[in-house]
Image 1 (tube, rainbow, N blue to C red):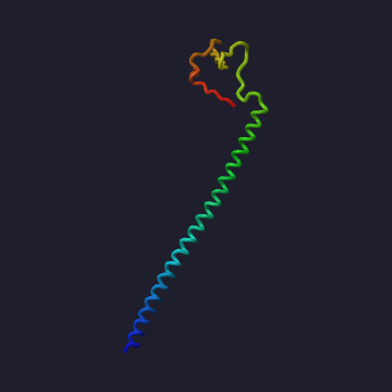
Image 2 (image 1 turned 90 degrees about the vertical axis):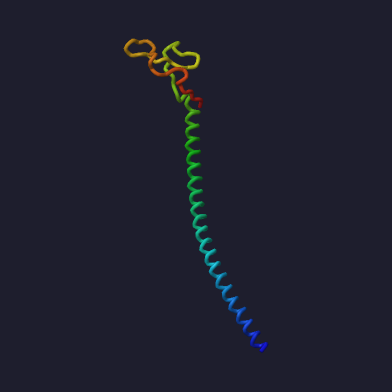
Length: 118
């Protein structure tokens, strides 16, 4: 009878092993599916990184062109020059067309004027 019991124990172990192999295969298939999804994401990130790098290089090229242009021109923001109208900060008062006098309602005060240093 011991042989019969050994055979039953062996059958149980084989059945357990078959169940284990099925579970491992299912788990492996699940992992393989996830790996495929992640590879698609990685490819998307690589493409996006390439587009970002191209955008950065394009912006740097435009900036270099702009800087080259600014170096060639003495001033990109010319001021109106008709004599001694310039104040110490380089602001030229605008004139009211009807009176010929400085326009105090132009809305520009020293506080509102943007100063650009290039």
